[in-house]
Length: 373
Image (cartoon, rainbow, N blue to C red):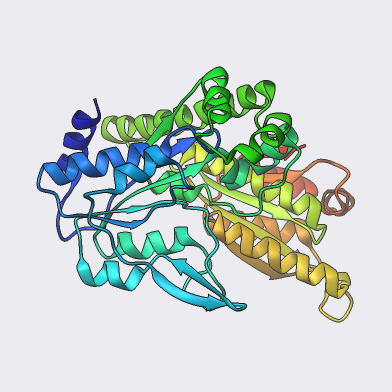
């Protein structure tokens, strides 16, 4: 089966074009993502493919470590940070070597300050732009738009995250699945963590009910990606595709804005669509009146939205509804996403005389209005 997967991947390799991306997704550490990537690397190597291992993290697992033997490795970039020597992916070396395919593990990794890119997934984009195919891996808890779902299940907020657009860019997304019993057995056998950490893991992240919920998230995510890709490609061939264009309207309330951004990102991912985040600065929220903390949160929300694939629009206007209307018409928006009715933004719109005009504009342009909880 692994050899057949390698053959299929070989058939997708085309020189002088943007590289292709394959992502292995798992519900947690220890399901075998890195092991599967290295298996595939061996199969590609046997078939004459110029493949390099750019970065692999074995976490001391003997089975995984054994698979590195015989594979061509790109030496890691060694840097000193806070008195410690650390290893990083050497993107420049990969670009100079120009392999057909490169293995890059730990997609959500945060690079050492001073690196060209803040995140490893950004390094991967640079490699793809150079026409090199990439095989990578990520755990479900690192995907940005379902981060809150994972936090609700595990009680842990994962700081290192990958934007959903990476999954949309991927030519292939593969779920590495294990049952909860199999995963716990691997943990108890010391195949995931050192024996000193096993008991703590069993009482926290690796509880059966949590594993089942994470497994469901992983299965749904991969199934959704496959369904969207098939739906998009088949429909595009059969008829002119109507592209959805989403507009998320946010205020300076950073908590609610985060929710609106994350949920709109999920919708955009589902429809494989372009989307925008709109912030309208009223006179009451001018730079000299809005608190510094609110300004910082606003900037962070803009950054988060851009990482998730949105184009951020900032407008200055005391007429919020009127500004939204103009953006709808300028950007040919098909769906407007807004917070639930207690939002200040919504209240202002209700008090304005042009709210009816907004509804008429939505109706005239066949634009949907989504109220997000």
